[in-house]
Image 1 (cartoon, rainbow, N blue to C red):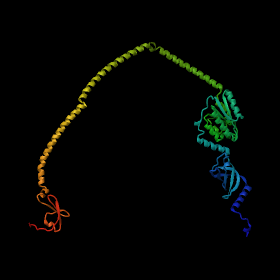
Image 2: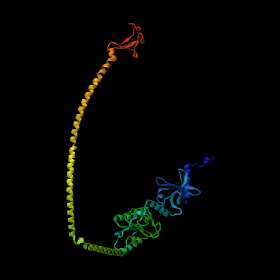
Image 3: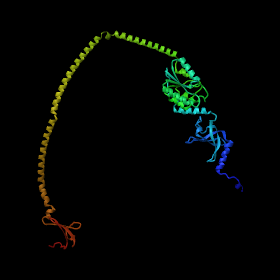
Image 4: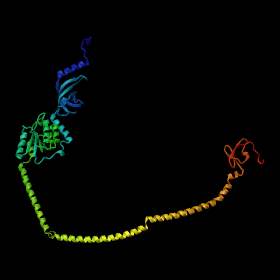
Length: 450
């Protein structure tokens, strides 16, 4: 049979042969498509599907490659990627191991620029409310730029021409390349710790790639966090970076930044002379006003005869004192009379007198109550004596005491008035004048027998 002679492969062996075939025959390819099902695992690896109108392929980009991207992939984005076509043996799916990815149409750097700008703007890093004013005449100016570039020479030339004795501190930093962003951030922090009054951060013009360090997030955040006012001077007038939006002032060129940071010495001297002239004129006007007031006061009656004012005030004081003494005397006499009247009224209405009168009235009432009570008791006794005798004479107990008895039939204790209420053998209870007995009926006599 044919199957006894043919090589029989396991699923794993077959999958591995397909994997080797793909990796050796197709190997690395460039492919374009739309990203869908984008997801990043906790380990930092990205898994997604690359598709077009006709088909789709699974793709994976490991963490190291993903971190090198200059943009953030998302579902629906058209991309061009480069990777190895292979097979994921565990599931037998063929996929592409992505090593490089670029947005299709819009450049990666421009896309990264727009996305980061939108993110930082939403966080408020570009808010005008955070902008600080530049000092009018800084004593120390800090510059973060390349020490060999044209930008630093332009800045120093302008500063020397406008104000030769200004103190300038230069922090040499690379302004291009992968390490440039870190050095720019370090320069900003170092100059701020040193205590400069204003800072210029920038470089000359260049391509988007050349200016990219000034678009790095760490540089933008360092500019925003600085307490020192910062002028961003990156590129030429048409160039814009994210540092321009975060800085307190944006200068079109490094030379323009130098012109902003210091004013011309001649202009300052002219302003000082103008201020001095204005001050002298104002002081002259104030002095003339003071002289006029002094002349007016010196011509017044009070200024010429001040002792007359004191005499009049002294006389006025004496009059007020006499009126006060008279008023006090009258008031005192009135209070004395009112006090005497109140004392007499208090004597008549004294609590001790009123209490004594109440005690005497209470004693009289008590005597009347005792006398009236005794008479009432005596009269009651005279009325109830005959009634008690009558009640005693009519009492059943008194009748029983004369030899009569009450007979009741048990068990209901019905009162027996006639002999025919009883029968031989009935038990009766007999109540006597003193005590009682219980008996049984043995014989009943007819009515009329003795």
